[in-house]
Length: 398
Image (spheres, rainbow, N blue to C red):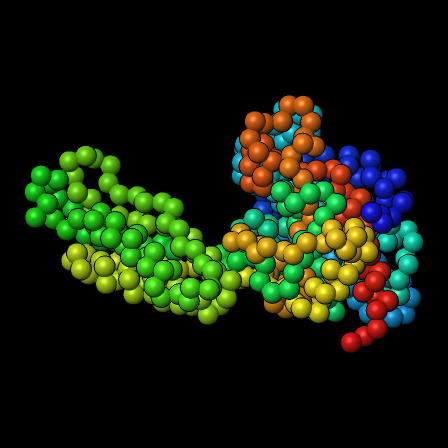
């Protein structure tokens, strides 16, 4: 691999920063300690820091020369509301909060890149370092943008990366087009008429209506959506009643919808609303249907992705840059890609063998209580961030 030697030499200190962040995880919009730590480090390296974007988000600015060229690099900082089962020394010290998605590692990788970029400034232009809060459901990218991120710091392009267990260390995955799905929620309340369970003919039972509705939702995927377009409807909670001999007044369904295109999502939302109303009516019940769109699909721009793949090949070798298989998880970097050209790649986190003694018995998957970020990635990701910034600012303007 063609890593930056100085970054490799400094990786033990960045590893300690990563493990410190892992041991002190913070939830969405509560990343006060993490934000303070990042700001202190950036300022110690001579990087001006601008705070208050998305509450706890911040932007570091590294400028060199007179060129108006700009590029943005983004890392997320928040943790998940999960109880870590790992027992190694850097395991979470905050009960019920855990860095189970590797945002501690993403932050550390960008810090490693920031240190090198500030020290050498081997570019002409401006690099914006975006440390974002609340990626996990909070929409921190959107909130930073609402606070004027791209107006105050205009960027020609923005790049991000996320670790991916199952991809070997030393490999990246990058492709143009949709790589992560949109994330939406639905909430259905079926309103019947309660009564005695032994006299159902005197009631309007919402539970059979709910059962039919759950089945009918899946026909939207199999019979309304184009077969070659991917989407998911998952009913994940069903809540009704609490007494075995009482037919309840209501039954509530909640769940998630994932899709890659806005057209497919529009279709699903419309058809779910129609199905919900008609199925409820078929049983003599009424229905409230609420559909909430959280994150749009993450769609990589073609030109910026081609550039990113070339840079990743420069760092890891062409054969180590894999095709990015789309997955149905969601990512709020999608908001940034709707506003600014850019690209988002996966960096291989391995299969979990890196975890130290005391790790949990579960697999090293993201959003798993036994997960831990692989510190071998730190110099790889930092080198990639540096090359993305330097190569972008020296490339000819399109």
